[in-house]
Image (cartoon, rainbow, N blue to C red; front, side, top):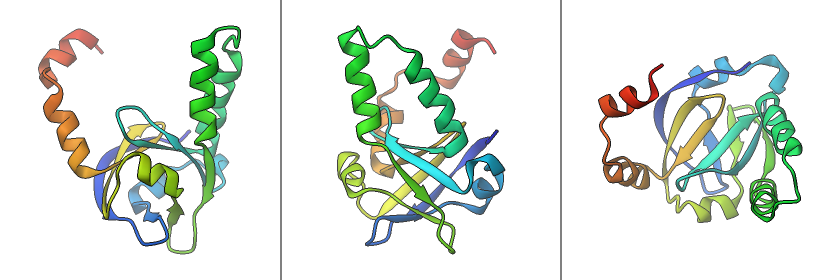
Amino acid sequence: MSSFKGQFRYTIDSKGRINIPAKFRKAISPEANETFVITRGMENCIYAFPLDEWNKTEEKLRQLSTNRKDIRLFIRMTTSYASESQFDKQGRIAIPQYLIDLVKIKKEIMIIGTLDKLEIWNPELYEEYLKSNDQSYENLAEKIEL
């Protein structure tokens, strides 16, 4: 099982490749086979699942009833944007251009570890997202009660 924590700022190269921080590369389980599944995320980011974690997500999607229109749409939107990317020798993965365009990434990116996956953000949009959230960390913690 992979486990990601922390955040890093990097740049994306002209071929759409991003460097996965060494700390995150070390956290990837061997079952992932150095492969990520890259897809559309929530709140205008990109999700990067290690292959083993994606397989768990995919199994959950398979369990949903496709008799419901909203479920069919969600599955289509998740899987139609999905693509696999393996590490190159420099520890980079390639992000499809259609995802880069979708989340308005320019040159800089922010990579955030969110336990089972990475989130890839345009740093400006991430800051806007945080500022638009009117709840404090303390209020969220009270509601969640770990």
